[in-house]
Image (cartoon, rainbow, N blue to C red; front, side):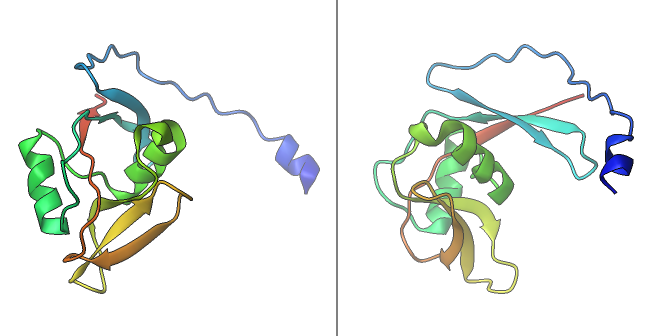
Length: 135
C-alpha cells in the first residue's frame, strides 16, 4: 500500500501571479481554494475594528459599511492560521448563519482556534475582509 502511494506521479500546482494593492492597515491572509481544489480568490483582512462588541446583525451591517464582509468559517480558519496576531484573544462573528438554528451564527475563537455558534443577539467582536477573485 505504501509502495503504491509512493509510486504515484506528482501533480504540478500553478498559482497565477498577482500584484495585490493593500491599503494602509490591510493584511494579506492568503489564497482560498474552491471546492475543485483550485485557487479561487485572495483574502485581505481590512484594518477597521468596531469600537464595541456587536450583535450578529449589527456586525454584518458594520462590515458592509467598511466596504467588506464578515469572513466565512473557512476564511476565519485561514485568518487564525496566518494572522492570529491581528486579533484580540476573543471570539469573532462569522458571516455564516447556523443551518439548523436560524437564530444563531458561527464564530471563531482567536484564543484556541475553535469554532462555535452563538445566538445572534449575543455581542461579539467583528472584523471584515475583502475578496479578490483569481481569474
